[in-house]
Image (cartoon, rainbow, N blue to C red):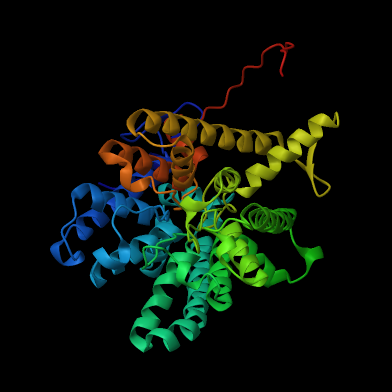
Length: 456
C-alpha cells in the first residue's frame, strides 16, 4: 500500500491524523529508536564471547544504556571484564548514541539515493534541533564530517603518547578507545580508576579535555568558528556558548584548586603546583558531561561535590554530545532573572532580545530536569541505604550523562539500577524532548483576562 504525502501529515493543533496514530511524534520515535539500540546492545554484550566472565542481563542492559546515552556509569569494569569484541560493541554504542541515531539514519538514506519523507524529516529535525526541515539532511552530513574529522585528529594525537608507552597495537587501540569515548563525552575507560595514572601527564590530560570540550560545544559552534574565523562575525548564540563555556571552565578550575588544594587524597597528593593546576583543570571541565577522572571522586570534599552537582546539571551546548539542561538554558534563565531585577520586560543577550517562547522553553527544560532529579533522588533514597550526597551525585551524574560516581553505582541493586537507567535515557534525550513525548503540543486560540498573582 502506498502512503501519500497527505497521509503523513497530522493536524498538530488538533492531534488528529489520517494514519493509525493520532499524530506524528518525532520525540517518541527517537525514544523508541534508543530503546531498540539499547536492546540490541544488551543482547550483543550478553554473548559468551563478549565478556571474560558471564554477565547478567541486568548488567548487560545497564552497560548498553550507559553506552548509548554516553554516560559512563558502570556496574562491570570495561577493561577487565569485556573482551575486545565486547569493548568494540560498547564503542559502537557510544558512537551511535553520541552522534545521534538520526544522523546515521539520514546519511544512510541519502547515500542510498532516497529522499526523506516528511515523517523522517520531522524525526531528523527533532534530533538535530533544526528550525528548517530542509536543513536536516545537510545537518546530518555536517555532523558526520565534523565528528569523524575531530576523532581522526584525536586518535593521531593520543597515539603520540600511548604508542611509546604501550607499543603500536595496544597504544593505537587505547588512542582509538579514549578518542571515541572522550569526543562523545562518554567517560568509559579501560582502567578501573579511569585516567588517574595520567594525572600529571599534560599531553594526555590536555588532549582528552580538548576532545570532550569540542564534543560538548557541538557542531554548530565549531562549524561557525571554522567558517567565520572572526569574533565580530559570529552569531549571538555562538558567542554566548563560547563565553559561558570559558567562564564555567575557569570558575570550575579555580574552585576545585581552592577547595581541594590541601586534600591529601586529591590535589594535596601532588607535589608540583603545575600538576595541581593540571589536575584541577581536568576535574573542573569534566563534570559538564565528560565523566573521566584523574583522582578519586569519592575522596572529594563535600563542597567540591556539591559544586560539581551544579556543573553536571548544566551540561554542555545544544546539538552536541553533551547533555544536562544545556548551557543555553542556564544562560537564558540567568538573563531572565537579571531582566526582572532590573525592571525590564525584555530578556536580552549581547544586545539582542530573546522571544518569550525561547525563555519559556529554557524554563520548561530546567523545571522538568529538576523534577526528574528530585523524583529519582527521592526514589533512590527509599531503595538504597547510602549517604544522601552520594545518591544525589549519582542521580545528577546520570541526568547529565556525566558518568562520575562517588561509589554508589555498584550498590544500587536491580531496582536502583533501573531508576538510574531511566534517568540516563531522559538526560540523553533531553528533558524538553521528554515533555514533548508525554504531552501533545496544541495551540490554543483562547485568551483569558489577566489577573495579578503574588510570586516570591
